[in-house]
Length: 151
Image (cartoon, rainbow, N blue to C red):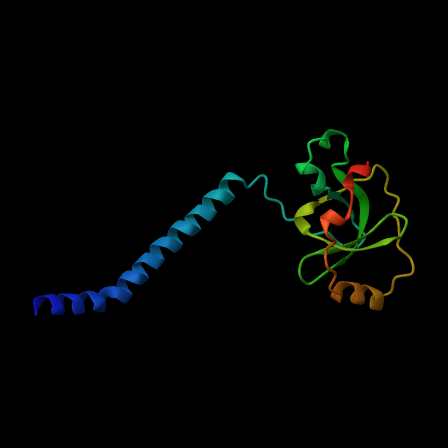
């Protein structure tokens, strides 16, 4: 009988023990996040690019290649056309060609031009921008392209 009462008592404490474990894990996790933010506060930057801002796009394809010394590390400059609800950016070349790809914010860096001449993208109204922002575009397969030919 003692064994049954002891097990019943342990089962009654189960939810309290689970709550204590959850609190300890969450506390350790949040402490780890705070330590990371304090350690790397000078490296963590959240750019909020406005419409018409000049940016460079990190060419992440060349990071994993052996012959990456001679390849372009950044693509651009490009102009911000739209910021989608999901956080991605729609960009255009300086000649006005709008890219159908979406670019993640972590791949973008601000570009500081030497002169203040502004480039404008003509022929785009709000309906076109809204359709571009709401359009679901699948990323192309990396194996479909031969990036060795691109310099």
